[in-house]
Amino acid sequence: MSERAAPAIRVVAGVIRDELGRVLIAQRPPGKAHAGLWEFPGGKVEPGESDHEALGRELDEELGIRVAVSLPLRRTLWHYPGLDVELIVLEVKGYRGEPEPRHAAALRWVRPLELLSIPMPEADRPTALSLALPRIYAITPEPGVDHAAFLHAFERTLISGVRLIQLRARQLGRPALGRLAIAAREIAQRHGALLLLNGDAELASETGCDGVHLRSTQLTLGRAEARERCGLVAASCHDGAELERARALGVDFATLSPVCATRSHAGVPALGWLRLAELCAICEFPVYALGGMARGDLDMAEQHGAFGIAGISSFWAPA
Image 1 (tube, rainbow, N blue to C red):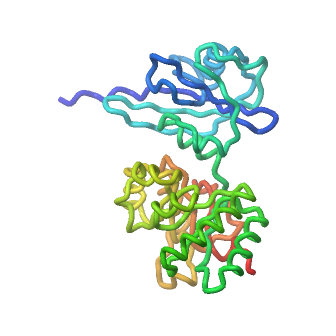
Image 2 (cartoon, rainbow, N blue to C red; image 1 turned 90 degrees about the horizontal axis):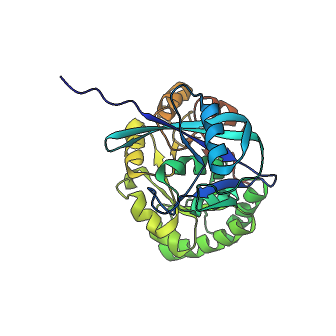
């Protein structure tokens, strides 16, 4: 008779913001697992406690603050060898007192985007991504021969409010793509936007991009290898099998397409909103709905489990 698996250990963590929108993180002290890494403060849920009660007790003990209001933000099940952990993240909407490092080695208030470059335990990474990543992910069309006009449209796209964009230029040779990526990176930095390069992690690193977006045919390139070169790692997925490969590789986020029918992929069956919801429900990383998306579809995508929406034509500002 097989031994019954132990129930998951329930852990709460709190997202605390200041008046500037910065997020509080705590450094794990020496002698603890993951010593030196930064995390969202919290701890184990004791028997009989609600999530809110557990977070209040932990933040009182760790930081010396009294939580007044906390709201659910995300819930993830993590599988470790011989141990399952259910991480419950709550956003603290009100508290009394001034946080102090009673148990942590140090405390820091950081801008959400800074979370992407701070060493954290893997379990905290999805929460960091959900706080830092914009909800709209623009993808560029092919640049064509007039790169000046393309870069002008690239900047207009960022002026329109886009803060996450993928440079997709599969028809360019590598030297020309490198030069274009450097120019696009300089524009993105001026606007505080994140720039990912399609398909080439090494070139993304060489040109100073914020990450790479892997094609579905590149899912044999692991995140560790890609991240050594260039930060964020995203992937294009089209079904559950590809999402599972992306999960196994530990990508930071993925696009899932086509959710709706598109003229560019005529004849390709659309997933539809219900299948999108089913697939997003099994992903612990953010998923952007792609294919036939317009800005007005963001609410619908979020209602069906997507983190955000992605696309080319609806988000690209013409020259």
